[in-house]
Length: 222
Image (cartoon, one colour):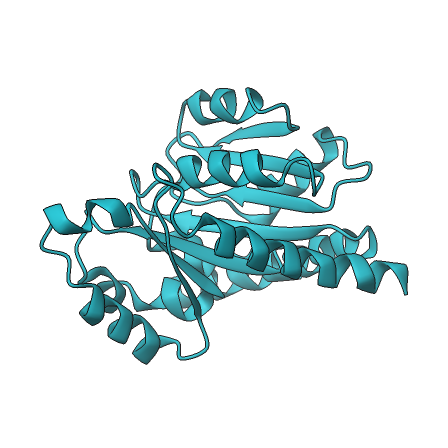
């Protein structure tokens, strides 16, 4: 019975997520669902991305968090529209939450919408929120065993940001093992080795992101 109820919840969520995706696509807005553990560096990646792209791509952000709006405040300092969703203990965002957030955001001219999900490597992978792609952030301080422990999030994602790469010499993280495990789970996934502190890898990441956003923008103009 529990499995049946869960399937019904996911079906309802997926239907709304498809509708959101169609609406965003029609407006030429590329939506990215950013996943990762607490402390992986999702917000730092967002800040670095916004700093590099905000003069080239019109961005908006939806922040997901359990209780606080601290991350929203960090993003707002960069001068881009941002809306906070607090889940009050819920471990993931869902399509209904994102639909409500979109109703409160001015999407005029927006080309790229980044949705920072609640810090969790499990539940967010199950719930589509209308995105065009999921990206998972994994930091070298978490250990290279995470891809095999949490394979679904890597299966569902289009790219992995391997963050805090500047700390690699100070950890036991095995980069070769992590890369091989990720590619075994999802052979087509893009992998970016990034340090938000030093800037390493950010150019390649931003180029990829701009390219993905431009595909939706071109579709909307056809």
